[in-house]
Image 1 (cartoon, helix red, strand yellow):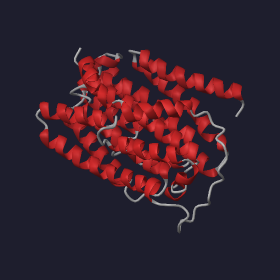
Image 2: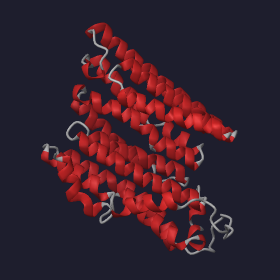
Image 3: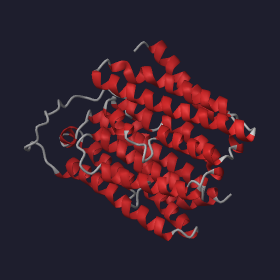
Image 4: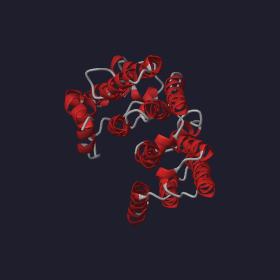
Length: 349
């Protein structure tokens, strides 16, 4: 893609998100979401491959549906209650419709079906943008409207997303689909705690972005798209393969890695709020996700190449990619757990 065109598209992507962040009026927030969607579509379709075009079409249709639902809900609220402000969303029909629309935008269960299919058709860099940056604007709106949304609805969506995210990734062989289901499960944890401690949601979102960025950049550096190709990573770059296994365990939420921090704090907060059953169910569903992360770790570190895999052996050439961002993000994805006391002190301010 032409660098000037790419610059304009990435600037529009940033502009749409910032516009949604800064808006207190539903029309401006909707406009920001639309700019965001329209800017990312050419980036998704730049491969000129049938799978990429199919993924782009699916993404456009789901995002357009969600945007139409948001517009319908805000107009309904303005008609019935006389308010266009985001904080003044008060009619039950409007609040439920907005919640479902934002769930559709984020890829939360039960409206998650588009996310694995779309991610599977994209290259890893575009998939990274879709899994991280594109979550920010809908989450900003969700945090603002949470006080008016029905509490059991949020808990149900959160628990269902953690279940679907763990269950759906069990039998996958495509790494992008596995990361999509991982994304659904992590978003479920964030929605689960949203109404009780929004600051914990922001912490979880930040760590999710760090860990997912590290996972995507590692796969891009190894040029791995399937589990079979992942098995050849050890001979190409042993250090990166070992770190990738640790990043996957961090995504699974194992101590003493960074991913344990949000799960620990969320389970603690749920117990404090008198929801031990929800906390127990969420912890049990996290074991499903942990299983497929461990499966990837086994392939990465415990299968010695050459073996009976059908993947082509990679050339051991020098890396031409810039690896500094990967190094920094991987360090953050692995070593932030000792900062938990400082983080909890900041959250209580």
